[in-house]
Length: 253
Image 1 (cartoon, rainbow, N blue to C red):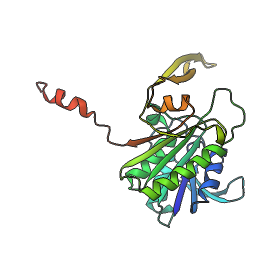
Image 2: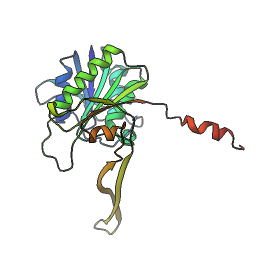
Image 3: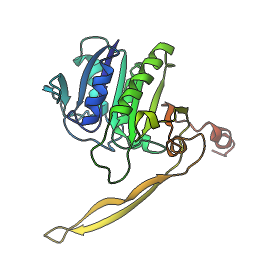
Image 4: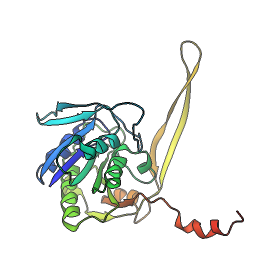
């Protein structure tokens, strides 16, 4: 099995290294990841400038590829031919923060996996539910979860057009309570606008605010994490609101 590993935190991020090392136990691994942090970049396809790819080494001395494109660009580049050998699976992560609820539309980690699914390749996104003010993170438990889920997804043949969004509590292996198959929950954002002035008196803005929370509801990604479970949410790219179609057809157009 040939696995492409990418992320949205940059090719030298410790979460990517931990993920790549565990994926190597399953098969051949190629790393192609951004050369900088693209957190909250969403689903990007760069078409207004050329993209560069160069070789680098990870902290363990293994070779990798990096690009000045977004996470989804990295996946597209690999699948379109920068990586010559056929890729069987794309695994994105490990993101240092959870990607749950509405986060999936912002997340470069998740949208990298989406790009794989668009190209007909199974995709898995892995994120760690770390807490605000955390110190150095141990990505080992989440990386081992990723390997377990990747092996099972390939053995069972993940359905076409489906990606898995996996979120792992920040806990030791023995403290993880197991896996729950979940639906997207509701993220509660507490964003705030911080307006400032530059030295010439012109306004500029930061979007900040408090750490987001969520609605603790059983069966959701947020609810599973709160209870100490690994959350595995199957996602699809069809965003059609089927429940609204009948009502809209009844309108006088």
